Image (tube, rainbow, N blue to C red; front, side, top):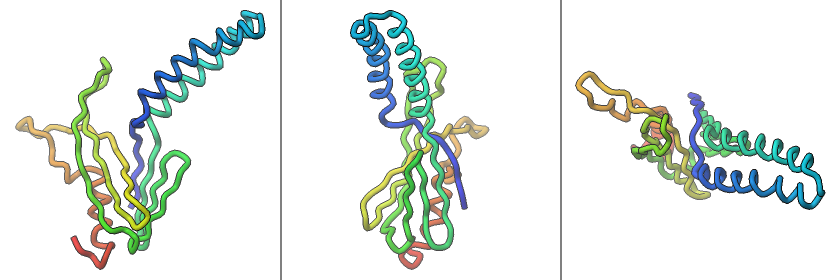
Length: 162
């Protein structure tokens, strides 16, 4: 079983603020220290491009989870986690409603997969939109992609205890 998704980094706001400060300050420092406005403009273009790309990456962090009969593999950006089933103590899925501050962003739910292993506790998040049923209520969360992973993993850890 394999699932691919993206999520918004918990450090998104920090990256936005530090990047904005760098876009303002670095060109000024470069222009004053080099004595050239052309240098300041070049640094501004590079700082702006770096800021926009880091904002995009922080807003859409790629993640993939794959599970087979022996282990669970999670890849987040450039980091890879491997959890053999005998090392996993518990798996839980939680949900949190997020109201957004952005104008065009729709409120959404964050589905969190929490894995407690011998080496520590790990959490992986997925942004999900709650689709509505005919009567206006959101669909139950048993259909979420991280819930599917949990349902696949639970019978394989610790002799199949649920």
